[in-house]
Length: 361
Image (cartoon, rainbow, N blue to C red; front, side, top):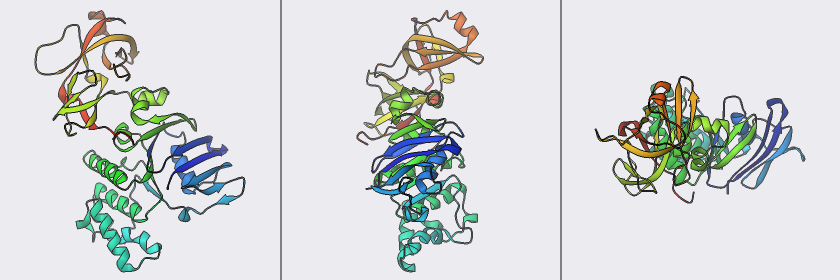
């Protein structure tokens, strides 16, 4: 078992945490910069000691200020992966991955075989003999994932692992992490600023603000109906849940079809995401080129800088009402006001379709 229980205070950094992660669960940690997200990982890894508190990993107490217990970082069975791959520059990829098995006492041959298996698992076996300087950012981070997993950690700590990657490498590594964490039933904690990381990889999420957990729960619940300021900001996209009825089409629980771009398989649970700025508002349903047309009753209007945010009533499944950002002139011309029925219209190419988390996780 590899569950985590943290109850810790650190006055100098202004944090007071109470966090639990079940065995096999992936927890996303969200929050503004400087609120203590990375501090949480350092406390769990044993790289920081709290002023007061207790940390348990897999039922074993590794930190307890009341008894003076502090298990050294290298003996905790924890692997930490950051946005920089931190590979040993003088070693080949396979030697980097074999380092942890060797440190655990495996023979050179056994460690190399284990490293080869992990390089195959992350899809870079053909790069085994290259040194880090010969790898792209995405390739190096895949090798870093293999190295972390080769240590056979009880717990994997991921500190913005995709932040330094370009837009072509990040989606592939995101899919890789999702698959490996699920296939190996690995417990992990993921610090991220990216909404897609949380949606694609994590089961549950906590939002940290001012050194404390202000919101927690299943990812979709928190991001679809945020109750904290930061969660509301990071979830500033429209999110619609449903099932893929045919390639490129999501059908909601209330029978509305949403077309978009993405590759979730027909019959699978999925979500559709789009930016409020991509949504147009019409008084009557348009009949021009194929678009997503959603009937909405306006719940509220708010100024957002130079635009007006039109927020619809709650979705039939309880999700946060959809939003559209339009100019103040357009809002006045359309005579928009709370209670008015309108149509939100968004082009299919502005909608991203992504797999939802499997039920029961």
